[in-house]
Length: 233
Image (tube, rainbow, N blue to C red):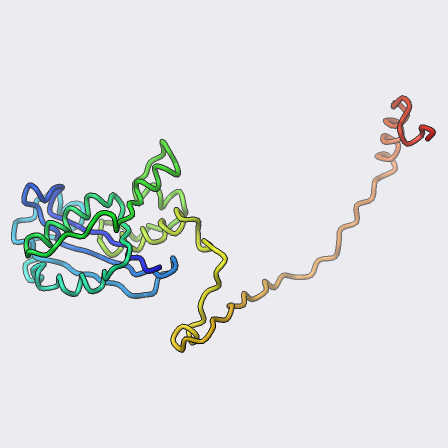
């Protein structure tokens, strides 16, 4: 199954208040494995960047001034998304901005039925526990040390790792990974062999009771009344 893990950065919290999307980052996954294909774009929001938003992602007016408008790259974005299932963290937030941008250029919205919300997944799986991306990275041991500021592509990469863990880890089924040549030629896939781990040979341990331990054991046995092993059949 083809899935797109994505994240956005914006000028504010609500498109209903005129805020715009300024960045989107998308990661393609097939069978819960990243393919290496991504889509990443910055957009000129045609409005000043509020200081509180800039503190979150670091995108200034000067940085975004020469970036394309959304409509200039909308076709590329929609082509990359295709009909794949979409995955986002707090998906309602991201989808409101994506659909608001599509509405501005008179394109139909993407239905929420196509979108998986990893916040809802995390709250269902770990009720009462923090469900932020940072908290889930910490829970699953995902390295986020390079995440100084929010960034759409970086956060999508982190979310892809979290999503794999939320859906059961790398081994989510009994299927074998496709061989790269087989995938391109249409021939049956071959299982990939996992190399054996080489460890130094160790002699088996000898477990022998000491004379003192044997004496204590015999003393314990003597206290048992009518032991079964001495009873007559």
